[in-house]
Image 1 (tube, rainbow, N blue to C red):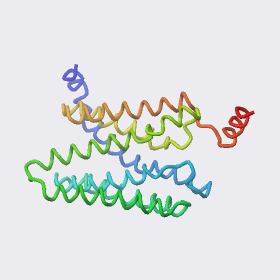
Image 2 (cartoon, rainbow, N blue to C red):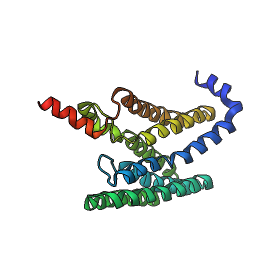
Image 3 (cartoon, rainbow, N blue to C red):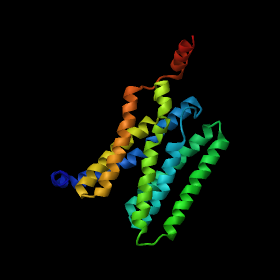
Image 4 (cartoon, one colour):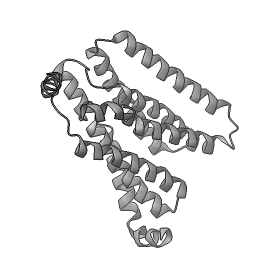
Length: 228
């Protein structure tokens, strides 16, 4: 099945590769919608910092991986992505009312990035590509799945308010594009990686269907009625 599908899609290799690259760059701007929401409410209330911190850590790690692979395209794309996420984080920090907490979270993200870059520098050059790639994959899964950590509150409140819909939707599109490209390349590692990523994104998108986001005022009224 895998080989048959790869043969069918082979003539579209360049097209799918270009689409995957374009949607990846486009995904980097999905955080602007969240920043717009932050700007409108003049606060980061109900909006988590993880998408932005995760974007910075992933940018740093993928940038390092690009240097390991000596891939100029990967270096350029991730440099742009890193710069964009830094801007998002600055906006988040500016409107946050818990700046000490944000500083602490930024410090942890910086320490994690430094530790992993240090590991990549010390690792055996013959092994670093596969091992560092596996670390990036594991972190990517953690980042994609992070919105599900609040699943208990989503079910309790019956609302997906606070989940980064633009990032989740764009993530689903990007991972699907790379899944198709991985099939064309017959790269099982890339296929498995993106099958898991697509499944995680799809499960989160399903939450928006099951529990549509409700305005806070409406939620408060519902809580008041339950209390009565």
